[in-house]
Image (cartoon, rainbow, N blue to C red; front, side, top):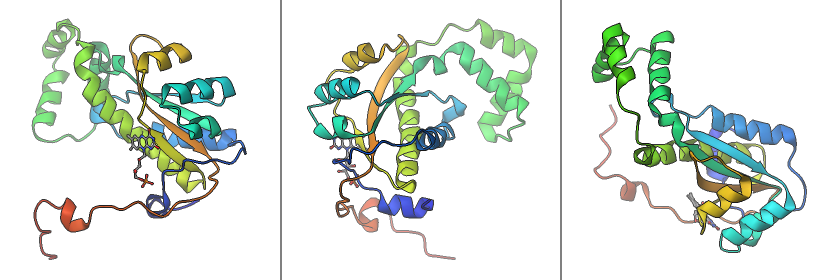
Length: 219
Ligand SMILES: Cc1cc2nc3c(=O)[nH]c(=O)nc-3n(C[C@H](O)[C@H](O)[C@H](O)COP(=O)(O)O)c2cc1C
C-alpha cells in the first residue's frame, strides 16, 4: 500500500478502466477511509451508494454528460449527504458526544459546551425550533467532499485509478435511480477501477501562487 504522501503525489484522474473487478475487500477499505474523515462538529453527513450493476452505471453515464468511463469503471461510488445529520436532534446528540468523550474544546466552543452541560440550558436547546435543513446544504456538501477525497486517496494507495465526477446534469434522476430517501442529496460520483493507463500530472499552481503572503521565515 502507498503512503499518504505517495498516494497524493501519484493520484491522477483516470478516465479509462480495464474490465477487471475491484474486490469487496478494497471497496470496504475505501469506504473505511471515508468513514474516518473529520467533519464539523463530527456531524458525518456523508453517505455512499456502491454501484457495480451494469445497467445502473449506464444510466449514471447518461445522467453525467455521457462520460464513457463511468460505465467502464468497476465500481462507482455515489457520494451523498444526509441533511438530517444536521437536525436539531442530531445536534443534541453530537453535543452530548463531546461531553461523553471529554473532548478538550477551547475558547467559545468550550464555553458553549459547558453551558450545554447545564440541564436548564439543555432543556432550552431541546425546545428550540427544528433546523431548516435547506440551510445546511453547504456544510453537508463540504464535509462529504472531505470524506470522498479520503476514499479517492485510499483508491490510489490500493493501486486503483479513480475520477471524481461532478458533471451531474440531473441530481433528482440519480436519486430516483438509486431510490434515495428525501433528506439525502447527491453530491458527486467517484469512478474506481484498474487504470488502462496513467496520464502525466496535470499542471498545478506554484507554491508562490497559492500563498497569499510570503511564508514566515523558518525559526
Ligand atoms: C469536484 C470534482 C468534479 C470533477 N468532475 C469531473 C467530471 O465530471 N469529469 C471528469 O472527467 N473529471 C472531473 N474531475 C476531475 C478534474 O478534471 C481533475 O481533478 C483536474 O483536471 C486535475 O487533474 P488530476 O485529477 O488528474 O490531477 C472532477 C474533479 C473534482 C474534484
